[in-house]
Image 1 (cartoon, rainbow, N blue to C red):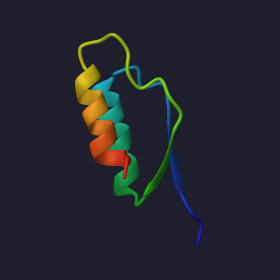
Image 2 (image 1 turned 180 degrees about the horizontal axis):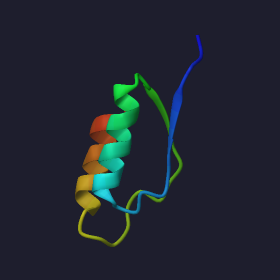
Image 3 (image 1 turned 60 degrees about the vertical axis):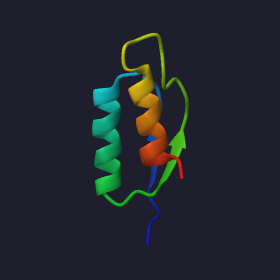
Image 4 (image 1 turned 30 degrees about the horizontal axis):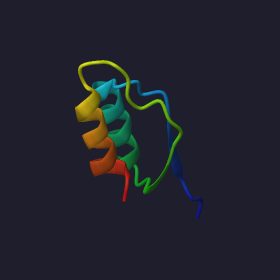
Length: 59
């Protein structure tokens, strides 16, 4: 069986896009992720993006 790993980068606090991408990968059974950086920036969704990152992907 092939192991699938999700790769996420350059979110820049785009909560909607990050949530959509995370749900897409999780729904396909991906359980391991490489988080490459640039998750938050000076925008309105910084807190929400960090909460989603930790709740969904960091285990």
